[in-house]
Length: 134
Length: 423
Image: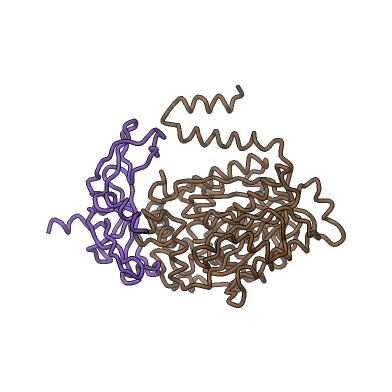
């Protein structure tokens, strides 16, 4: 993603900033112009709590350019407690820990280094909730 | 107001059914809109064997397929060329592809345009060609699906394929295309209590059929043991669940059915009619689907296609589905009317999908064994369906092949194009 694109999406990547539809009251992430649930104009900004649970996961061995240094890593679909689902890496886990339904929470981590210039891109990952309680 | 329109009106009034109503409107309009159109037939096909063509560039492989298709049609008179391709810009740094290909094929002063909708680019291009001929805008259209994936490293190709997903909210997190399908498969296995070896039958069937196709990348059967011991790409997807990276090109010549007789002369194998052509989309991101385990776009596009053609699932002699990953075979069969939700994998176990089965699939190897040169795949499916319907599929021939269905999927189920062909 371009530098401008990264700057533009910083509130989403750092704070999970989405919206709540003023019409049907459903939470939306990331922000949209049209509510995907009721097709009315989407609503005011709303920051998600960052808590959710694992809907599905995969441990990836073949990975795209830009992610080679991290492989293998686990990517999950995380169902946020407000309703929206997000795609994100899991962190602070060992293989055996991951299971569907596991409660997780958002943390900010390095996602990748971009291109030859090596800008570090930060964004959300998710870790097991019990790790925070330790 | 007729009954269908009244139902839609009522649904629109009940807001919670808004999305469903919109889908009904689209299906309804889709049927109403085709009544004044011309029927379209395929009078020439061509393909290059799928594989790693390091000695040929994208223009060469496209030419190979197009020249063969035009020769079979016995014409040099072409009005338009539509090229289905996904990655020429990303991997080859070559856009403006349709004009490059037209130039290389000697097709000057024709209309040429590239059609892109990820892995559904091939069938999308066919659909544009179909619209052009059906509407009367053009009389002779060549459609070519072409992809060159082996000029770059595996990681670059993987990153290129990931551009079919949402760049900002999926690919940015390092998920590959295999990864997205793995997320679907993991949840599917969890929700429907599916055993680890449940999908093996899809892969074994594809390879068995591909062994009978001289144009397939892998012409070798595989054993259950080979499947079970295959290394993981992204859990639970192993290498035998997954279609290969490769190069390929396949083409067809489209004319109005009423004019097909002009081309079908002498030794010509006969025209095949496009009985239905339909496309539907879904959210681009898997995480935004209402139900990530159901291919809504496959359901909508196949329902449209059934209604356009008057064909029912039971009438289909064979089904070239989009088995990029074994899980997609199960989901396609479920969404297209061959099985209940969560039970598509039973069809592989019951051998319903073999050449003699209830619904033969991947009859010449499918994406798994023939190969999946992404933007070309939709056109390989069509070319193979034509081979089957003409009775020219050799050892892979399905008995009594009267109606063929082909379904091409772009992204993790975001664009799904269904065609039904008949003799």
